Length: 160
Image (cartoon, rainbow, N blue to C red; front, side):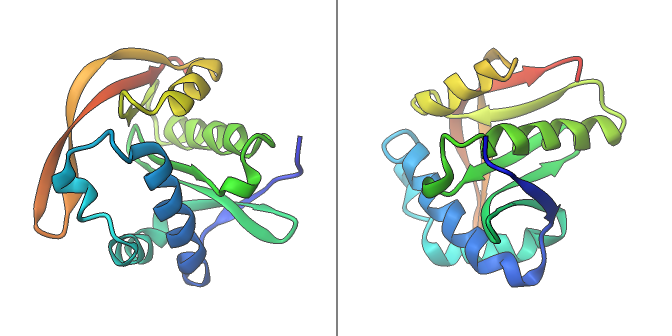
């Protein structure tokens, strides 16, 4: 297990968050989401979103570099991403545990997240961490011009 330091993201982290998010999103979502969304998920769109969300982002730092991040809103773990170079080293488990802690600290008994059905790697990871598939639903993914319905699986963990 890699030594992982968690800290609140700063504006200086926005570029690396953008890079991790863009590449990680492509890895997990390419071919598994509607083209209407995939075509909008450009590096620039991730840059805008990362900068806007720095205030509610927690980063994992390994060896002095940002290795991954989470974004939590209410009882939803909205984003969990790890840079490709740090996958398999335990960073994701540390981040997900922190997301669960944040949800519990906000007063929620359980947490949920959305994962596209075709992202088998993520689904296996969540299941290994004690989350369960609570069923299918359409997630309304935000875009600059509105939302796009994305068929997803709702993963849940309760109690935290």
